[in-house]
Image (cartoon, rainbow over all chains, first blue to last red; front, side, top):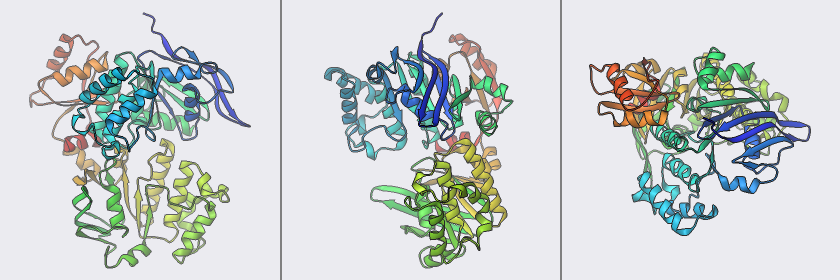
Length: 242
Length: 300
């Protein structure tokens, strides 16, 4: 069985003047894989991700995301990926339904499809009673679940999640991870950047960036064996503290 | 008692932020408020630091009432709010001098207390606070909260948004401050930090779920927890959710944490059930209870 690579990165580099933020990183992510992209503050995670989602041009190296080249087809990449972050996800002063309609429109979905998807989403998340309430009035955990579903509206090949469950209560967090497993099971690749090591434990494979380079890449289980560590937090501390 | 709350309640319009909260923090203790965003942690901090008045209940800090003696409390406590609240357009050194001056102190007289932290940001003392990295901002904010030598330190989510290495260093700093006799009330949404406190209060939706030492809280958990794993995580979760004897099913890193309703639960039965439903490489093993397991059981 040959599973396709949805993300292919080779020697990807980004320099700002004399400073090399991302230094020749290489990796592949398969279809349906949950890939954790870890690193300390300032290690280069955000810079690397900006290149992958087509909003920052690399200095050198190659990258293909959802079959498109980051240099030549960044707009096609944006159409074929979903994105959600802790800092920005939904508009607080629009209702749940309005947010869905808005983002569906941004991704160019026909009105009939948006209406249909909106109903499915609201039913699946049990949001019937709050569908016409402002998103700003909802608990954080609900917002995060809606934001994730909205990021999937246009059936992207890969969805990028930036610290998706920070601050969310533990039960809602589990429900969120169940949604991620389901998404991956249905064939969408999930790319998670985080510096919370317990989020890393859920991923199929994780990479750890230190000072612009990928210093480790494997399954959480193998990394723990390799570094003789009890959990991913210890793995990370051993790598980043040297 | 260094900090004492009795039946504190506070509402904002329709929203009840905290409801009937009581707890005590002993002198020299590191006490953790552990709960997710929206649990009421920040409201409690604001009440205890005299920035907000409770609707009901009483509270005192170092023996002073938070309403009547608010000026005395302000002189004797340090507060590091969750949101970065220093002056972004003042330099590192100017911020520190400013906070020392308004408390009638000088950097020199209390330098010993902040030395360990401040030496790490001293090379950048002429940089504006707004241009610092997250980890450095956090260290500057702690230095400013300490420069008047407070007896009680309030830290509202000091490690949120900070990477694992800086988090570890930060907790080492807190342990050292504790050695110097400072009482610390610290909040965090991260359950793994709970184990680093002397005692913790688990809090959700404005209510305290439980207060005890981290070791005791875990012991109160009523069930045996099993790590379960199989070849397909999503299918495993679905099948466990369908299993009629399940008490709880929570994804937990590479495993699912499973508890069973029956007292005489035999893992072999579950193994067989999962096999019958097409799962392969099924692995079941009893595991240790974590604070997070306890939190979920109480919050259910």
